[in-house]
Image (cartoon, rainbow, N blue to C red):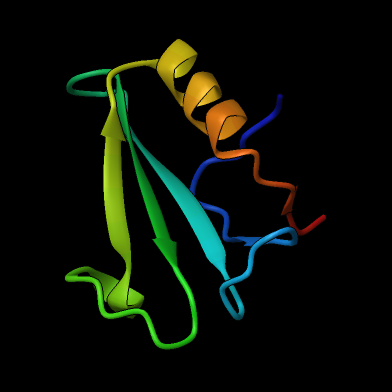
Length: 76
């Protein structure tokens, strides 16, 4: 699965209104990834009131998205 970095995708199969996701890499320092997600009315502590999760590497990132079952619409 191709998961672009620093690109906001829309989660099409979510019950949360306007559910979005963005992945940031810390490959220069730790090789890990931060996954930010937010939706209309979310109240997370990050920008856009996003919540975040952390995974240690690319394999864990792939697993995270597979387990979430998201159908993400990434912009072209």
